View 1 (cartoon, helix red, strand yellow):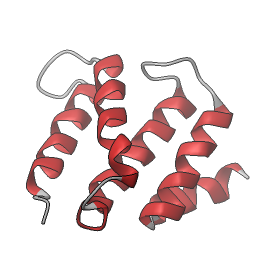
View 2 (cartoon, rainbow, N blue to C red; view 1 turned 60 degrees about the horizontal axis):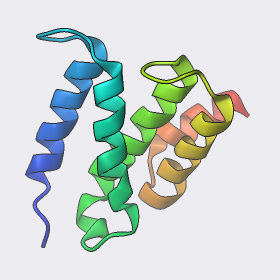
View 3 (tube, one colour; view 1 turned 90 degrees about the vertical axis):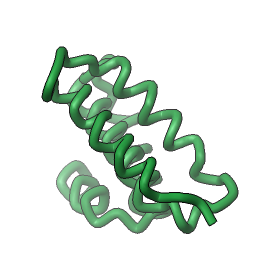
View 4 (cartoon, rainbow, N blue to C red; view 1 turned 180 degrees about the vertical axis):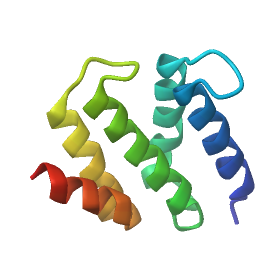
Length: 101
């Protein structure tokens, strides 16, 4: 069984990078790390990690939507929100999709 704790800790640090909490804001680093977590969407132990992966997918969508660390891209934002909603049952992502579509 996969350990969820590292994902929660990673999410905290990535949120800090993204928002400049406790140090310099680094959206590009946050984006790369969120993508690394999101790559596990089809991996072993996915069910145990779905919440962390869903958070990563949602944050990637937000970063594309707001141009944080990447060029703004509505199509990519919708793609990541859709993945978070369908694969990880993310209510936040569903709400964001309802706002955008």
